[in-house]
Length: 198
Image 1 (tube, rainbow, N blue to C red):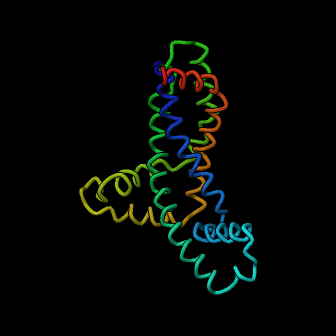
Image 2 (image 1 turned 135 degrees about the vertical axis):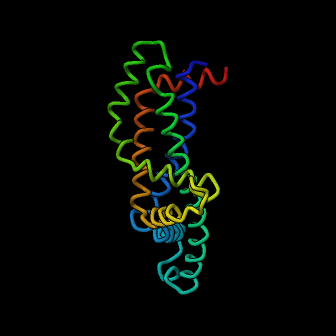
């Protein structure tokens, strides 16, 4: 398998998870996450034929609140995993998706142009924050580089979790890069998948 194909397979694997999280978060709306989940459940029950009168009853409001709370914790956990995936995508994109992954001059130029055209989407993100959160809170043991409790990063993660729009922006930006990659390198993606099963 070529280096470019390996890289595209990895970017696709991580990109699919980013795309899914992006879509889940957008589906819950641009308010706060818990409210979005409640609204989504209300809409789904209404579409199943449950009347507004019944949905507005105390019994259903309590049911929706409890179910939304459980779903919130799962979505929140996926959000945390998604922060790790954002950085994994960036590492693969920076370290392996470059002009060195192919000897084909046309593809080299295509990669360089793609990276130039999408640079602003990646550079707009606060990678220091993402790396700090990944390295101390999400992928490791809550200790900072001094081996102390990572209080500053715990606070940072809590604030990012509460700042729904900022977190959503991270997924929108990287999902846009992933969608652009699939569009601009569609033929190469197909070739990579063929190589991966041969």
